Image 1 (cartoon, rainbow, N blue to C red):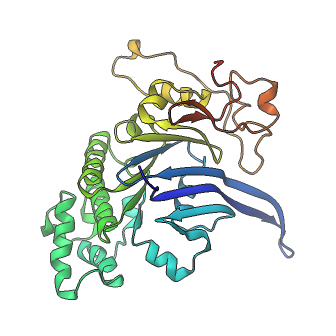
Image 2 (cartoon, helix red, strand yellow):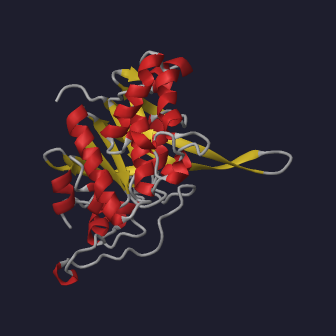
Image 3 (cartoon, rainbow, N blue to C red):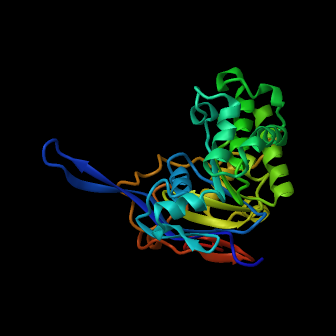
Length: 325
């Protein structure tokens, strides 16, 4: 497949916790992302799933260098962004764009749709000023919206239409990589399918790479080529979407899959209910971070964090009991 367009190597994003009113001192560290490695090739869709608070959005912002890395490397198109200057990062961001979860919050309510889509074209001087209106109209058509709405403001559109505008803005600079941070979780189910189909169509037509972040495996399985499962700042399983969803190797992945709703409840498998809540990233447990909630945990699980162990072709899971359960 050649060199990956995105290569994340052992990335860590930690946030200091301080206390005290007059004399501030660090009392702890929140390990939001703690040693994540993944890669993404051109034209590929990688689904990143996990519970809320596991670090998915922080990882997305770290890749974009909106949040500085504590350690590790983020390599985009062969360039290490973790050591790049602000000017170099701005140039690199032309090639990768972020679509946020809530389009109403990510779109400026004071700008018309035309101004929203024209702004990146003008800032990055993508085309001559006289060509901007035609380019903006083309962007609207690409996402299935009529150019007649260009003079409207975001509040005049529905949630699904606003998310299409956000996707159009992301496409304005003709990026090679799009990071979609839960782009359908705030939408109705029927609108979710439309946005998913739009993203899949754009990936095929423009040969885009897509990092699709979600907490719902039923959404991810319809669009992803590969799936990475994240828990408490770490990747616990990664592999082809079909293998991960149909033959999961990690107990956490199995619990997520068991929660997928089915049309006929009687035909579904047994629901796996995890005990307790996810541990705090401020004080993660020793060993495997999942062991306090894992029904199969044993003494070795509490000793040291397990590495990703191959379970099949391009499929790996971070569990000391791989193959036993």
